[in-house]
Length: 445
Ligand SMILES: Cc1ncc(COP(=O)(O)O)c(C=O)c1O
Image (cartoon, rainbow, N blue to C red; front, side, top):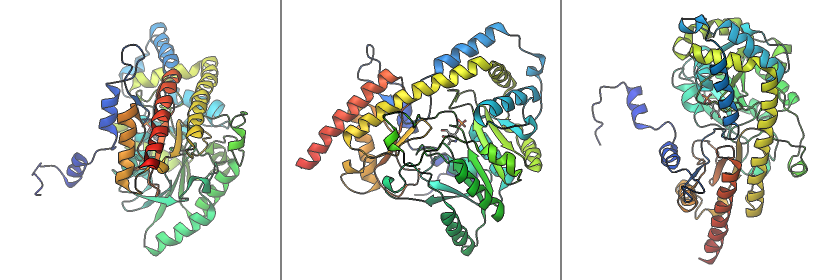
């Protein structure tokens, strides 16, 4: 069919015809029909978008009290530093030192942009030439494709580390052998391996990299002059791997270590960290992301490219005020973890009952689970059908596997923070009743 003349660029036409994410329309539909035990008992449970609804009310109350009790400073109305107002960056650096990174962080090594998405886009623009390759372990966050590549022209390479979930268990999937192999493969194809991107805790697997693993990867990257970035957007959303119910699930115990510690020791131009307040602080709408790098030229270039991506000053001010209250931040992190773990346990109990394999999460909002035994056929179409069947019959909307670039069909992501615990209980009962029935009907057919 002839393409209608829209007057747009080739880029514009491509964007106009390709949705940013395949499940967004159905998410909007589900969001208009949210389950409520009294008003809408047949409603939906959108468990596909990575939002934290477990602690949102705590943050909302705190922001309301800041607005009510404090005076907005003069600087909020004018232009300010392109990396973010220095006073706010000082508060962000202090928060990172105390809570996320546990090592010294200077505010001169950080920049703020409108959410992690903007941080990813501007970083890619500064680091990569068009055609350079960013290597990411699969499966991973579908939106990386656009965020990393749209403006910079960098190309995403999905490093396949396993097919069945039991092949990796709860271990971090990337190792030096895989990196050497990928390096040789890309070199032979005439391509430049420019960036290694690790998400820790990971989206969608919940995997986390231990300090020694991060150090080995960093050494390899510095040796090969590859930029290594660790996205720690879920860095404070941690699962209690020591809990009685969980202990048996984890093969290789490791506590959370921020990449900043390794950056601090190595002091290299090739190591960088991303963070945002969207997830751990249930504020995806405020749009505050952070980049941290000891590469002075990178930070300078970052500021100059950041003009269209700045966080509005009123939001910067609110974040700065929020972070000043150490007692609140400490208590909030503890409470968030308690609620996160309660919801996580509920979902894995359901998956255990259904005998659906999953990767035991160490952190994040996700459980990456293998529903392939319910597929009619081992095809993309059958996977989509199963995803829709679950939604149509139960109202439970999972994140479809497509876009995460895992090779096996039938894997879906469950966002266990997307609804309250009591609503999650109803959602899990519905999904489990439906799938138990479905399994029997397939066997009988
Ligand atoms: C790994 C990862 N990076 C970045 C983002 C985007 O975050 P933001 O809303 O701060 O742009 C998300 C959101 O789901 C994510 O999961």
